[in-house]
Length: 449
Ligand code: ADP
Ligand code: MG
Image (cartoon, rainbow, N blue to C red; front, side, top):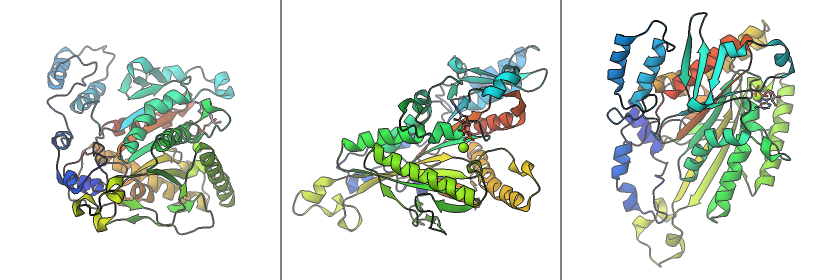
């Protein structure tokens, strides 16, 4: 796919995403008024007013970099690349609303790891107070990486939700699309973080349940809000409906005009309350387990995608009010406008190279396909991080599904999960690098209304 420019991506994606500051009585005139704030935030890169150079010391990144070259001490705890990372991060303010949030969480050790692994701390040092993670590169040096949040093995599900998901959920409630994704090696806590149901133990609940709790709470305070979900599994580039496993051949549709991505064949359930959501989620989990047993695979090899659709009627007055509302106070065809947004919560397939796992033909084929969606996600992340105008979103189903919820005015949060053992060195390193690249992404905010 050769997208002409970032501007057009942002424009096509934003077309259907209303500005959060729209007044409820939004009319055609407010739609056409390109607000000054839109213009201000339309600048994706804050070069002059960057506040974020390490600990906000006010030194310009350029100057610091020069000083660093002059005063580079041989035994410096910082690797040069670390400073380069800081430098590139300094260009993009931490407060930038469009920056992808990236957090890292380490799973608590299991019994076996407690017995055998004393050397994890040699590999990774978590520094949650300064939101850094230090990774040993070799015998001589380590590198320190900054994240939005660093969660140790004692971090609660609640704290993880608040640090990772809440800003995105709030965006969705104000009309932005959003995506929350968990990325990491199998067994490092992606499903625990994202999908843990915890019906009877509220403290255990993961991001999906907590997000629904917040969204339903907001919906119950306004009668004009509806909350619907769909729950899909993506396995070997095939979409399966976890709420109606008999359905096959579910395809993705993209509106040529608005860029809006939809999955017309997927079952959509209107969620009444949290108990209802537990039931639906449980059905999804049971179907996922059954489908994977039938296909003789494990859930770690597929992506699970929960989509939450939030719809809010915008101008009820126009619906019930004056006898002859001015035509421009209505949307197309005189129907009251509805503000739609959606939240995608994605439990990604394990990031380990599964082609290591055997020579079995099925597995090789599977590896190719699973790598397709994950590799394609990685490519898109690299392209976005580099500010490239060519974002290869059409290469896989996963990136096609994410197309209008990752980028544009959407808010995105990625949690990477790592295992607490030195034996996962290679995977842990590659997961951290994936996260660091995503840290550089600034989703384009509106350039054009
Ligand atoms: P993944 O989805 O990445 O393959 P899981 O979420 O299934 O990994 O986690 C593997 C195991 O570790 C599960 O038994 C899970 O309950 C447990 N686990 C993961 N993270 C935590 C955590 N933060 N606290 C307690 N148990 C955890
Ligand atoms: Mg899992």
